[in-house]
Length: 593
Picture 1 (cartoon, rainbow, N blue to C red):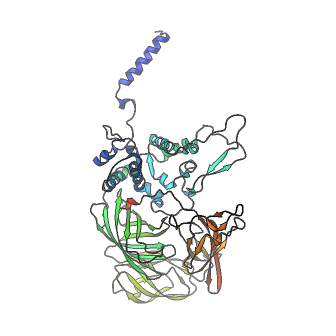
Picture 2 (cartoon, rainbow, N blue to C red; picture 1 turned 180 degrees about the horizontal axis):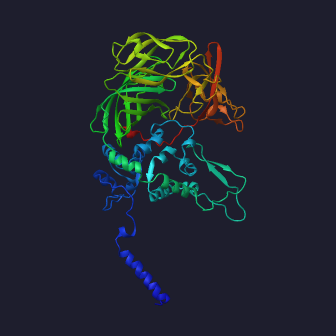
């Protein structure tokens, strides 16, 4: 049958009309999303985020993220959109969203450093795609970006929201492309870590991509594929998720830069809900024997994500030690028998304790030793920390490996045993475990003949001026001694760390700008390796050479250390940048309340 143009058009329109009468499911797949069935969330959020008959709420059903990001979203709704809720209601909504629209342990573990507030001077090793560094990472810590899962449509809405609220984002997402015969020298925008973007003028025009995609398009393509809303890990965890059973006593093994090893016990009691807990912490600094007790609260999100805080009356003014309040981020193991994370404090959370906790049962547990290394030969008295130590312990019950013998037990308590250890001569340099029956403290200490060199750790650091309108960011350093390994050569891969040693500290000028004399203005370092920055704001005593106008106390220096290793002076240094305060914070401290 032959059909003219009008007849063909009628048939096509009729076909399209018939297609619109088919059920929606027959035309397209059901939209991906997570139903919201929490009445308080619907009540407080449903005015703008409408809920359809399948339980899907605009935006909320198409996002999964961390407690911190959900907390910030709730704050933004209150601050910008006039949502009214009490702190109790906000806490309930936060718990629901983090449970219903949270992240699986496998998704959180690679980025848990974000929750731990670890100071990361450079995030380039954590950025999985250049497009994220040239868009999101300009303003945000990359951990915040990697902790979100969305649909492609919601990633697009997120970028549109950024342009609407922060119009300057358009220049980052879709930079202007040169047109016309006369082209301006293009600028490549870049950022180091999560700092503010800077511009570098290039010599010639920037070649356009063959697909003509803007940076934001590339970023959305990556996020939609690498961080989709639904993943096998989340589906599996959502079905396995349960309230954690953490009540009981836990053995702590910790470390604090500048303070050394920390041991103790954490007692966890049930709180008002299955996810809430009350804590009591008793710890001892192994290097000094100093002890203290703290009490606090913890809250577990999504079955494994501990957030908490502990308090005690402030007893000293040393910012590195025992603050009035610290916050906690711990990752609970799937079997519920161990927790790992960080307890942190300070204006910029720059101080912290790396914490490893294991559940205490009925058998003896060995956590570690008060010393980091044993010289061969030597005789050393040390403490061994743990739990459930019997009063009848004998020297032969401990195993330090060949050539190291426990000569006598000086004192025994259920949590600490003091022993005298004899180390034989000419033992090979290396790291050793220490065992008590079936309990093993792995990599407990090193055996060595002499230190070969030292390192100042971290090898680069950052501090921020403050003290007038904002708090200071301190910088803690420590010196780690090393012995040459089996190859007998220092500064090679098999070298053995011997732990922190006491050194003499100082500061040296870093020759970046002639005549700037940074070492005179940026601050000072004490003999415990703690750098205290100077105050912010123009300093009348520091003049710019070009215009004689007072400038701030910022600058960069070397922090140097000297260690006397048996008559041999070992030296090392670390690079320190002292910069201005951060006036905008993306922190959410309420998640631990």
